[in-house]
Length: 259
Image 1: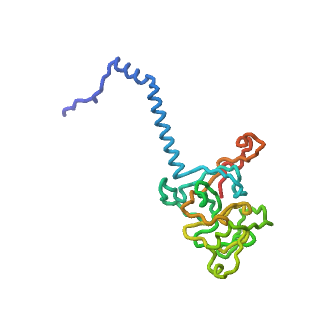
Image 2: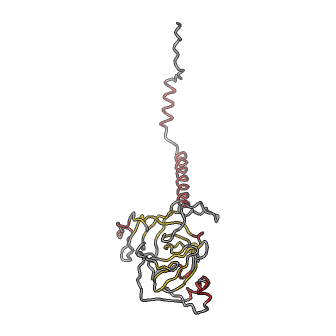
């Protein structure tokens, strides 16, 4: 039996001079231009990732008014889930497929129908086709009173009315509209109204101090931006403090879930 000669893999031999040259290339300081180009590339990638996340996934939002107290406080900073209801594709009116549909009781962030450059946050009370009314400050949904334990009434003895409520006349249920009687809606007494298709009715939890659907109407579903899910920062405003965002931090609210 003849033994086969053993073979060894081909090896590339380098000279000592070539080895020193390779080490010099590896240890050579990068030029300032090369360092700037590498830094610029990293910055561009970071900006693109930030814009993608902000556009389609999560956006920060600050609570500027007390319309949602006790649930959300002035000075709360929220993270809003934009993917859950289908984020809007920039420069179009189209949206990505939603993960879920808005439900009664959800807290939502939306563009104010009167001025879409402003963002509002309220609680969704009525879905398309729902019949809503309020009697002495109690909301009735499809004929049944809601048990809203999250609501705060700061001025229960007041019930202002005015021209802001006149828009409701065009959305009264047929029986009420056909009665021909006078309709004098107020903050605590109005309806019954029917929520139109592709629209929502929203109210603030601070029910006596909230500028909401009672005053300016329904929210088109195309204006809904997302659902806040966590308070990532919070501080109590105090004009007497120069830096309340450092000295008046509400530590207990940091990381609190939004319900």
